[in-house]
Image 1: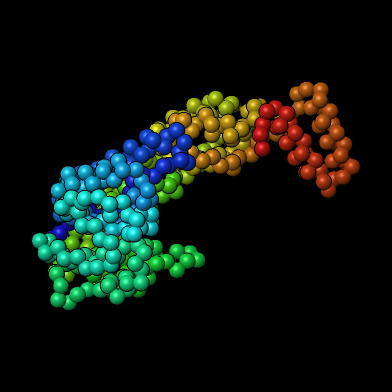
Image 2: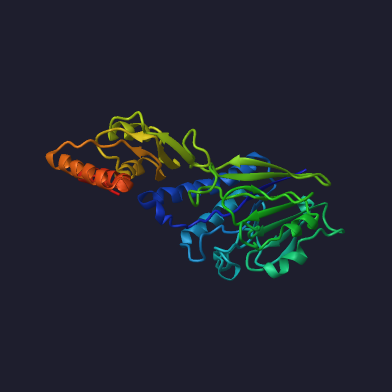
Length: 358
């Protein structure tokens, strides 16, 4: 039996500019996640680590990111295979300009890599070398008892062809195909060939599945590979969220502060959430989504607010507002076919007069 740790799309050196002031803290999370991959690989008894491309976010990452990656790999003492991805392409990969530790196999072009100590052959298929993938992706009848592939590319998605064809995987007869490029884990098993995207080990973009994981793959000759997801990332959805989205009924609230208090209780510095506000807003003060988001964002990593609620009709409170409503009623009576338009316009005017924003 052979156990392999599979990860990809680490994106070391990513700026995370969309996270604002939280960007630097998230870069540190990324480092911790990368270290955790190797700690978990050792704890799970893995004998090899696969990094299926996009270890770095770009070829121009700072030298300290490269040194961090190399030292983490070297300290693990596990054999590690790294292939280039589309973000860190072969011709400009940061590893080309440095001395590599002895346990790191850095593969620049499509090739078969024998690891005789593990009774294993690895078909490495880096991004940018797609023309050679199809012929390389096959089992060698005279090769090692265990044969796998590591690739960086896309399976066909809605409206797209992808750089990898599922039929290549289905007919290759390999024991496992380790994919990189997509940030969420996905099973692309074809026939008897087990095939997975590992996803990124920490959040790269907020739409990916959380918490982020690595894969531990158990290989036994002539048996289907067994794949287990091991949580690695620190970022997470709030309790009750489905794929990061959470509906929140605002009907019971009598003011913005009580709503803010309850929403803040959901959030931590590691929380990622898309909040959909539902129900009817019955408080007198307008509910301003921009102000709400500005107040909540410091309590979490990433937040999106969606308006799906219905405002309570606002009654006139000042002489000017009463005059406005009287004019609205007059117009509505004269033009009954446009009555709903006039009432909606009047409510919008009251909302804006009281400090609301559209």
